[in-house]
Image 1 (cartoon, rainbow, N blue to C red):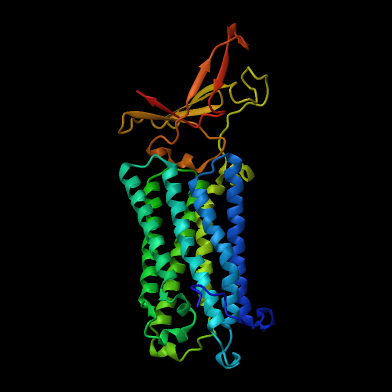
Image 2: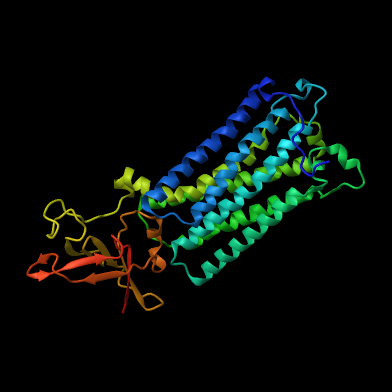
Length: 406
């Protein structure tokens, strides 16, 4: 016998009737996968457009790839197991072997999704920068734990029965040489997943505690947190379903085992997690679509040549004003402000610009420097301003953050 034989023969699933409840389950499978794909595609467009592609984007992309690959096996499992049917309507004899083979494949694709998504969220939090050392230590520790947990769960699930064919061919389990782990593995693995879910959900609250933001930004952050909390709630409901499946109560035994589509929660959980992880990266798109709510003050003028105040070009303007005790200086299109003139614990005062990319890293400036940009100035005879020959050459087109050491 091959270690991993081809799937058992079965009838064409398109010839199997689809009752209403099963049709609803199939809709859930494809709808949430499609929604996650659309949000992920917008994230990719936003990151490439703003040239902010990073490791967190690679991680969530791997999760999306696994989610797309899981749709086919999960659909086959859903149809061949006759989910959404009443027991008396299921054709007899009912051979579950093909359905369980597809379910085993779906398991191998499902388990890595949440791990990739969590890694993406943690890398994103590290990417924000500015956290206190204790916060960064917690994030690194969770990242390491998540990676080790993902590897362990994947291989235990892969080898949960030896020979591997016993995972779908239950007749082999009668052989004394067949070894299978206890069903408690699935409950423990789901519980650990929920534990890391809640920890990763708490970290952003820890980071954003006391942070002052625009109302629209606060609403956006709250919405993202609610999506993350929804993933946690779905995971709890899914765990409850696993417990009822492996450790049924007397009331559960008498229920119709086929007329139930809660198994689709695995697809919902994975794809809502992808949507939640991708939402913060859509901020630049919302800023371009709804600048009044999500925009930033550019301070650019509307007229003038490229060397005079009022030019549309960002380096031709210098103004100064005071608002709410804060000093704002717009020079060369870069808005710098001293945040209540407070010296930080490291002896620095922050001077911050408004990033034209609208990157989500802006909202982290309350706790340190986000990004350091080198500025190189050289003088030659390429242009004249007020009798001075001047040419400014910048290492980046826009200054995002400046650190002033007093």
